[in-house]
Image (cartoon, rainbow, N blue to C red; front, side):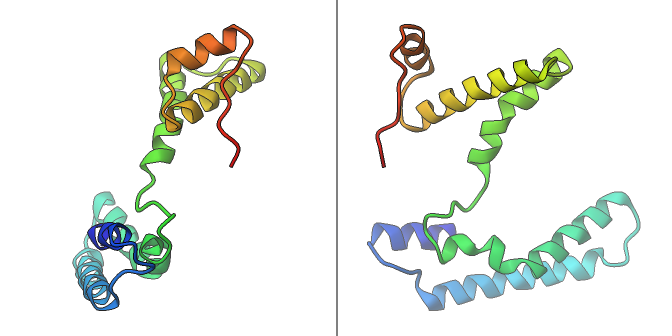
Length: 141
């Protein structure tokens, strides 16, 4: 489905080919139904997790496939996960963020650097400009 979206965007189309999308959705739904039947009565924590995932995929299909209708929606949440990874790593290394003030400062710096990186601006350059009193700011939308 991601490939269908990429092709539609490359072809400057407003929507994905409906027939091709319907075929892909049918395949996806069939796989989910097979997963439900395979995990329904199996014991164990892993089987329960797999069954719960299949139930979510079936019940929230429109949410999971929103990227096929609205091209601005990313097909995964990798960008969001990348943004919080450093905070989680910091917590693991130091055990915690010691004070609320320190946590707020850490998050502000990470947010600034993450935004700069998303605009193609390097961490080091952004920090140098910040310390020189001329912070980098993204262009106005």
